Amino acid sequence: GFSEDKFKIGFSQCTSEDSWRKAMQSEMQNELILFQNMELIITDADDNNEKQIRDIRELVKSGIDLLIVSPNESAPITPIVEEVYRKGIPVIILDRKIDSENYTAQISADNYLIGKEAGKYAVKLLNGEGNIAEIWGLKGSSPAIERHKGFSEIINKYPNIKIIFSETGEWFKQGGTQMMELAIEQHDDINLVFAHNDYMAIGAYEVLQSKFGEHKPFLLGIDGLPGPNDGVDAVIHKKMNATFLYPTGGSEAIELAHRILTKKEFEKNIILKTVVIDSTNAEIQKLQTDQILSLQGKISTAKNILDSQIIKYKSQRMWLIIIVVFLFLL
Ligand code: FRU
Image (cartoon, rainbow, N blue to C red; front, side):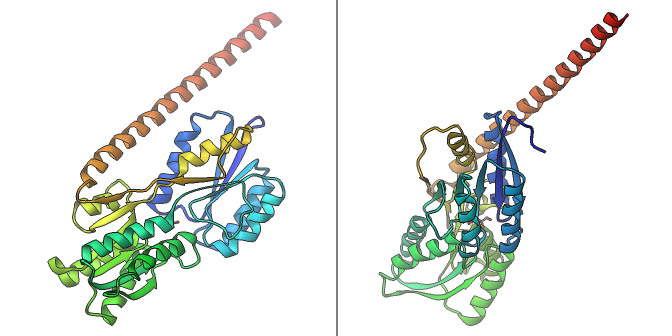
């Protein structure tokens, strides 16, 4: 439960199964160490719109002071978010968007821009000519729509490059595998695969590797997470040609929540930076993120040590009081 004097933040997460969402949440927990006057409760909608609507209702009922939400799909989640906002509860939209301006603030990298960058990278790899298979994220979620828009706008400028396959893997690795199988069943002339995230790209890679080995098509993903079996690692091991960093915004969301709750100035739309990660910078990217991860680990260990010292101190103080009261009664 919540303690009385703290701000209560509810975070309605669309799913918390994958490493990107887990990274987001641990960024949040780390940032919270700096803000002792805030508490966070996270709900997991399991990739389900109805569940997310119920979660948000529950959070509001539990008395949250602010809502952070990563909507599973934009349209179905828009009305409930607007309802919360109209009640006067501040709302931060994180990563995936709603179809409305009725929110307090929004944090995300520019997915349209990432799509365009991926498009330009594809053009360069293909040397202006070739066939592309595009594996979409969930069709109703804003990053998928924006990544597709940016990507196809660039590709459409090149008459000799065509997107010949365009289906959704719904953000899942398994979806990437299935769509890749379908794509090569339908086409034998795919030169490049663009997947809307690294999970689907890695799922697609497994199919491509076993079918084509060394002579497989180019492969692009998005997210650029550190850690084994994630995007940066896949680029280092030459499974993917490139990925585009999609920062989670977890720490920024907590910092922003604090600004809003303590009535400080803030920007309504915070756009996080992105960068391409390919063979030219993947190693250095890995070095840096490994360092950050180890620092974060140390910070949370330090926090645990501090907490256990406080508990010890409190129980010592309690015994002291009991002894004093006992002596007094004597
Ligand atoms: C994680 C994820 C990421 C993707 C983002 C889009 O759940 O699928 O891979 O970049 O969500 O919202």
